Length: 279
Image (cartoon, rainbow, N blue to C red; front, side):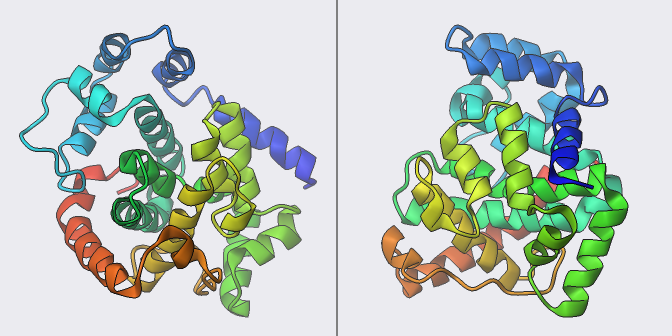
């Protein structure tokens, strides 16, 4: 399969008829400035499953908002359009690969939780949006597993056999890595650069421009989530942390210890509230 053929399949996946039509409406509504939180909330409220996912997120111990949020409108205001959009599209795509994606979803949740705490320590604005970037960082793997399950299973097997990062094998088999594939989805869904660039460059954060700080956070969080044994990213390798990345974020090793302790508590207490149909 050529990279061009693969891209066509992934773009087609982004517009899957199996994804609820409401998701496409949300994408359109959140692209412009003319739609308010109340309008988006009204649309979300028409879908019970989607409403439940949004409310589970905003009420999760991972976020720690005081009091219980029962209003979809309030949730949209607190989380923001990009967070809601990323959440509903990301979880919908994970749902397409069913129980086989459970371990990858767990890894993604772990990365998301660590990302939020790391962003808070680094004083990066909108840590909730950074968390969504962490949740979606391996979205390209989900797409590959869906559009080319046999080839992707081969990539997983080969990476484990060779003890190398799965991206190295993906490049051999597909001509591109999951990071590039995730970028195709981001482009199709019109994600802002501060969300799309961290997905594309989370293994090489120095290449990011608009989302450089967030890409650095996701880069570190992905490695820490692997260290903590959160789920299964598809290979058993431990990518090297880019030199100077912690310094660029202004984060010390002592602060990393705090991040890991807090993330562990939140992951245990709150991750189950964010389970998808892959569970």
